[in-house]
Length: 126
Image (tube, rainbow, N blue to C red; front, side, top):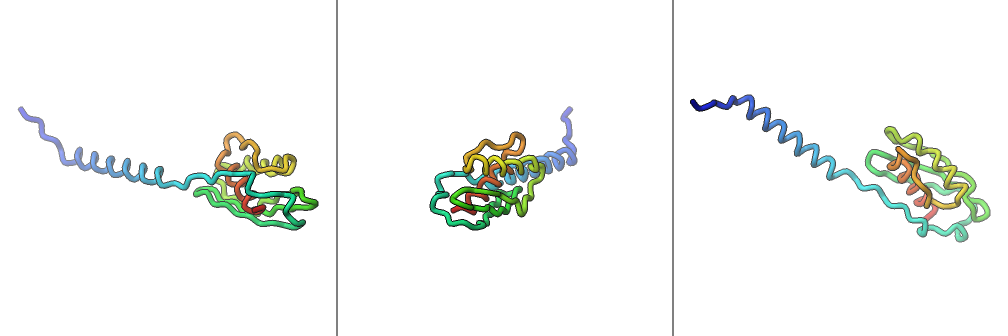
């Protein structure tokens, strides 16, 4: 005796296939994080002042102000940080000031936010 497949089974399988395809499309189309490159700015060439920078990496968006005095980064202020769960990354600005560089380690558990903050600082100083 031949088993009949119920239409609900095939409708469910089709719906599942559509969901899998949509999820894959979203994952593969997420923006890739912008890479930070310390060589893109030279502090000795920057005049004293306040520089503004932004970076948008999909789910994370950052706007910063960077104070430069005497060819050194004296302060970094986060104007905006839309981050999801990346709030711990905000401590990275102190590391940037103390090291005078954006080539610093990301905050564990907040890698995307760390990279976005660093890129916004780099963009401000370009």
